[in-house]
Length: 167
Image (cartoon, rainbow, N blue to C red; front, top):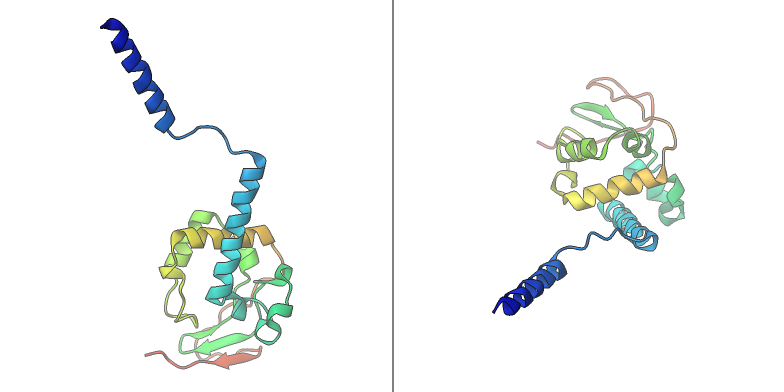
């Protein structure tokens, strides 16, 4: 009887250990594969969300002829509307100077007072927002900050596009 109890305990212990999550650290190739997959997810999200259209100069004209190393550096083409004129942020500088958690808060709070009325960031899954952050950080900082936002009624000194009041 005692022998059966010991065998039962050993079997139960083996089942518990076998079902538990492995605490074995990932190997370097596994880490690199995960990072590569996440970077690809971030790249894909940026492409399908159209981030390059505004945040990469000349992207609308040249499209795929702009190397990835030149993506998301902001621009000086203003977008003028009822709230004033805003410029495409240099995402490479912005995201390289903020934490991932701060990026998530910013992305979820994108407001409708920007030319990005159609913006998808507040409804984007957190996993995609994290992948975007990591992809942009992977690209590294580059370029200059975008011009400061101008209040309503001020004519921009740069080229600009006028957009209507969405209301």
